[in-house]
Image 1 (tube, helix red, strand yellow):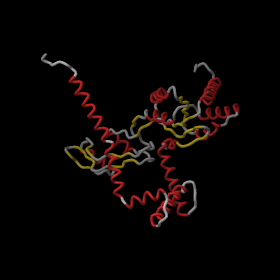
Image 2 (tube, one colour):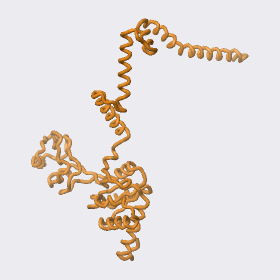
Image 3 (cartoon, helix red, strand yellow):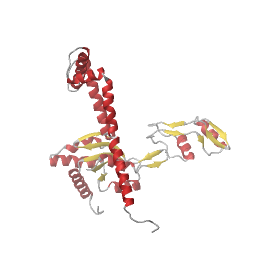
Image 4 (spheres, helix red, strand yellow):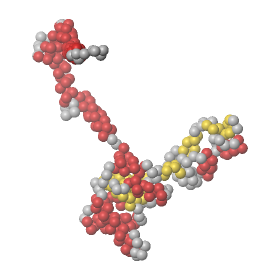
Length: 317
């Protein structure tokens, strides 16, 4: 954007750009950009192009442009994101697969040291083992309540230490210890806060739900409904197949216990009367598959023998 434009012109250009994005794209992420450096941000933009575009700006400007767009176009489907534009946030516009965009964004998270006063986004644990620090610094660990011992001239941590819990602020001693150990416990990048799709907002955790998980959940629910309906004798679409099978089992049991019969029951009666007939019938069926294979093998061997005989000469002729 040329530097000689007035503030008003810049705002109008920004409004036009945002309106064009709202017209072009149907999906979006609301992102948090805390602790993201300029070079890191540039790499993320390059990685997302051309399938997605990141738009940052003042929250008041973004809200104003979205409100004006909804009023001018009569389309208020983007109005639901207004309440989410709080803090250091931006928008990733896309028409592509949301999971692919999330995977690409997460590629650009980089390690960072723990600075005093930062809120820990994850738990920080120090594993047991040698630290490489000389014994003169034992008092430093004692102040933090960390059990240590001297082994081969260096300080060794006796057991795993849960140094910082998620949500806690990093203290000066904790930051110093992690710095001495050369540990960068935190990874910073764009944080995906909310997902916009088709006029509604939902949490990013919804993207973790796979088709297999949904199918498993529906199957379990159908099984539960069928069990409940069978127990209460209340027929439903889920329980009717089970009821039919159970009824058939009852009829078959009555047929086997009485003289009454029907074709399927008669087959079971014949089997119970003389199981050897079915064993004899099953044996030829099992061997029938091996016979054609053996015949084909013999035929191939015979053809090979005939080819050798038709050569008509010897190697020593």
